[in-house]
Length: 185
Image (tube, rainbow, N blue to C red; front, top):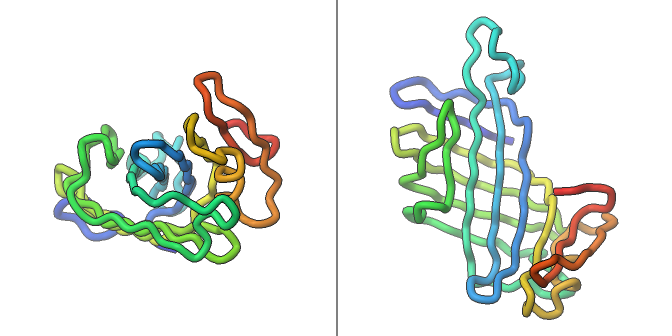
């Protein structure tokens, strides 16, 4: 597990991971939308340790990637990888540290193993020159399927890991949302 940040002109820091979450959305025009949220701090710190000596702001990453892949309604993404490499569009990710800034470079691989568990490998650079490297398992929180993505409920369920209980509900604007039973995302 790696969440390493190299702030501009400083040595690398291995961050302690507090959150590594994934949300997926199935869109008619764009295919699969991946939305990864990571939150880390210096080791031993919490996101609220503002008064601690040597406190530094928590670091968050938001990585949003579109891919035209459409998952299988029985196997989801099992055994597959989604790859992105390039200069993200304006809203395809942010580096959060005191404030947020866009990414100028992003390499990204989302992997789904045979049981439906996800992991991400990513590296990139923010506008001001902060560099990050990530290799982490992800916790899937929710899957939405836009109206017209058929079979929406089956597609959404198939993206979750084996053995988890998933509830599926219709959304007001059409389509469905699937999430782990007993959670709100």
